[in-house]
Image 1 (cartoon, one colour):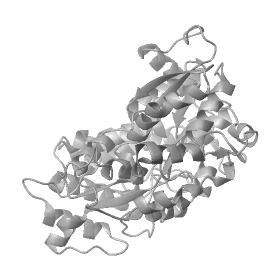
Image 2: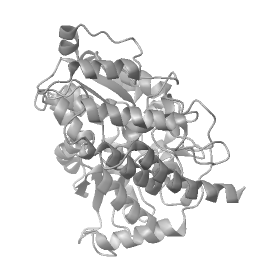
Image 3: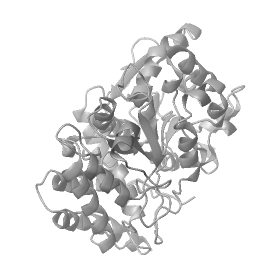
Image 4: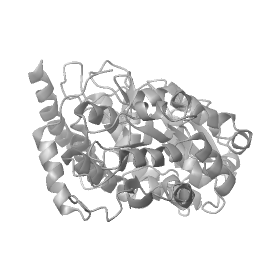
Length: 450
């Protein structure tokens, strides 16, 4: 595993400044009278909302532990959790983070070693986590967060509309095929495709980076020279921007995962390329008007043969937590095999958090419910290539992100430029020229260290 640098002083100072601007950042005594109240910072996605609905079961089993949830949108959660954890404020006992933050924060000493807890918890079975995911959440051989769910990316499309239009996708579709289908299916009543355009390193850049990778582009060459104005990157970004501007959803520059999920679930778009976790919305009759009408295909490719990303929303314990043992009790409940069965039996098998445990894919009820997408999800996660994400060699790892501390800021700045191009406020070359300047500053710091 590549080592991560210590975070720059600016990152920690910036996090502290951010903490002052957000409600709830606090010092000692903010958790209330009970020393067994644990505060959990979570992203407000559908699977996490299900966990909150079921949390009363945990409290019944553990009457000495009270749960306090803080739920935020993805961009807000990343900012607030980073601020709190980096400054050691002790605001949260459990934080929802990803395989981007986990290895870095483990190296900085910000997180508890959860392998020690897992191995002391009877029946927890740490080895049951999908190997690529387990590795991505580890540092020096130990897990510092455990996956609530794991995801890759794939193409979701309306089978009925494709059949009516006589469109057939290849077994491994190309982006050229996808663009042609989007053009054919686009109409006044229905967008041909939904793609994220909302700024954010974990919003717009998640799908776009996979397009850059498969088109042969990269952020930096092996010597940390920025490559965002290279022909390969410009071709990829121009393709993405043109596709979403010409055949994409209305308001694409402000659309993220949630907006696209709603649009496809309500029958307003014909295709969507995004996270495999979207199935919990699309296949749930209570939230979707297109249940059973969605087909699933691998992440589209162009030059690079495999372009699916690897991501996990996982749970970790900050070193600053005053109640780490109680925090682990909750984490182990929410990420255990039994929780997965509870979701399936109480809420429906289509709402099971996917992509975390191998054993999930052996549950008969889940195998039946997920026949259209379960095997593809598992295959995509197992075949993701974060150690070799691009066609040409690179000095970083990560498919839809760069596993370097600066990427939170760099990625967000670059995404803002490209989102502005999607909004028609500037051209793609203009956006990439500015993005190149941002990347050159980061690349220079790595060259200086050599």
